[in-house]
Amino acid sequence: MHPANLVTPSTTAAPTIALQAENISKAFVSGKQRTQVLDGLSLHIDSGELTLISGPSGCGKSTLLAVLSGLQKIDGGRVLALGSELGQLDLHALERFRLQHTGFVFQGFNLFPALSAFEQVELPLNHMGLSRQEARERARSSLEEVGLSHRMKLRPSELSGGEKQRVAIARALAKEPELLFADEPTSALDAANGQMIIDILHRIARTHGTTVLCVSHDPRLVVHADRVLAMEDGRILSDQRNHAPVSASKGISS
Amino acid sequence: MVALARKTLVYEWRRFLPAILAVGFAGLLQLLQLALVLGIFGSTSLYITGSSADVWIGYPGTQSVGQGRSIDGDVESRILMDPAVQRVEPYIWVDGDWRGTTETGGVSVFVSGIDPRADGLMFSKALPPDLRARLAQPDAVVVDRSDLDQLGVGIGQTATINGHEVRVVGISSGLRALGGVNVLCSLDTARRLDSDAEDIGPTYLVAKLRDPTQADAVAIRLRGDTAFGPYTTWSAHHFARLSVRYWMFDTGAGAGVLFLAGIVFLVGAVITSQTLIAAVNGSVREYATLNALGVGVGALRRVVLEQAFWVGALGLLGASVLGVVLLLLARSQNVPVVLTLPAALGCIVLVMGLAAVSGLAAMRSLRAADPATLLR
Image 1 (cartoon, rainbow over the protein chains, first blue to last red):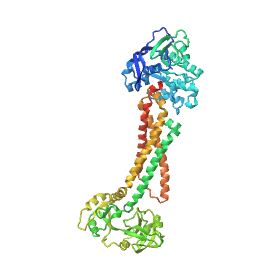
Image 2: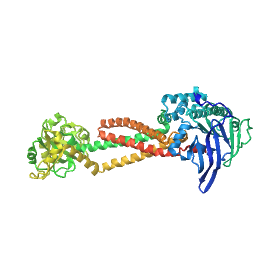
Image 3: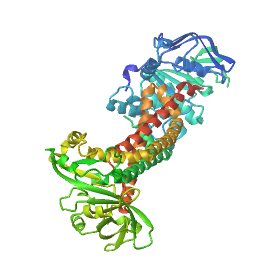
Image 4: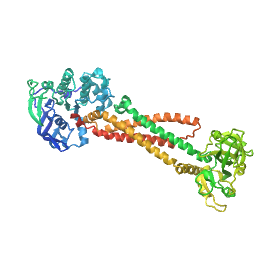
């Protein structure tokens, strides 16, 4: 389906930069209290890699994901996604950017109870200006890719947690995004289903050349990531590349 | 295109049912009230709409048919001088006090003295020809079937009006009046029943034109001549409207209709918008996810509005079915109900407007569908 996007799993070729953050800061104000979540953080994420951001809850990893994906504005610094500076885009342009280039997978599956798995995947494609035929074709192949070809007609109430998350991944994948953001995609799932989700995310980065940025404190994800960023208190503590398997506990606290 | 709005409505019908019911009952309430008011107050212009006269001539300043004063009978010759007028016929209105044979007390009746000839203009549409012919008999009267109990008489029986004896020679239908009972008799009988010495001529003259479409123009042309004493003219259509409007607004019924429309709209909109808001809130994370994936806020708003539209349409459908059944039931029980096309359209506009306002209110809760909240 995506031969043009096929990227050979090579770590030697110089990768292009998909996401770049320069000296970004973000604070939340609640009443009189001001919490600095991100403080002068800089990083760049290479394209076609599965990058994992891990760290304890409240360390700012979800905020970093929101900022890098254009869901949240920053107070200072700048974010470049696929060469576009997100801070320069208005609300409408940001929506269009997300429509064309990004996919999201959330901790909750957020599926419409009334729609079948197939319709869940097809729905966002309807808004991308694809023909009906193409939208259906993409929805079908995405669901096949996550192993749900036989469950397409079922509604969320008839699917298990793992299957629901696979539908959510198919919904993001069908858009053929360059950037895929996942926020704690496995934390609501048991071990077997969690493992399956990890494998799928891994495969997406490998076979589609999609840049996958995943926020999780699930230690099982670490071994599958090309790169692991450990965060604490709004800063990046360690940045490791997974040429050799990293021990599940190193650099991770939860 | 995946029909998210409709599929959600069908799948989660329990959630939307209160809104559909609220819209439906709001529409039904308004429909029935309007039909009743139109039916009841429509009867105040029965004298005009049930007759085939094109122009009415009566005392200046008359506000409704029942409030006419006598005019000079010679006005007739003035009216006949106009080339557009084909025929003129007198109409006598007498307020009477009816005493039946059984113990009914005094019943206030509106006596209509009409020309009983077969081609008479007055009540030509409301009175069957055979009953009209019977009115030619001295002291003969025709009453409405629904008034028989109130009058305490049956066919062939006698009673008195203003002290004069009358005999019921026929029973008609569709002659119900507001605030009294209609009694039809011939012009001669009416003159005998009229106890007011000041009444020197007929209460009205009604005219048939050669070209009925000229009614408004002729009515204006005939006005303003005082040589035969005070009189004025109206086209039948204008006079009927005047009569209905007088009753609607001078009795406060019109204000009542508008007031109820307001209440119905308010209550319906509150229930419907609350239901739709709850539906939006129930799916707010899914909407936020779609927005994260780049589906614009405008498209999400359209989904909510579409849901509101379907809620309105389904409510309207239910109200229509139930409304038709209830209106037919009312007709069968001689309850005066009239549903005109403008009234029905008004109800549709009210109901769909209610749904639209509720949809707009529910759209506001989409602001909570901020995808950034999914990452906290």
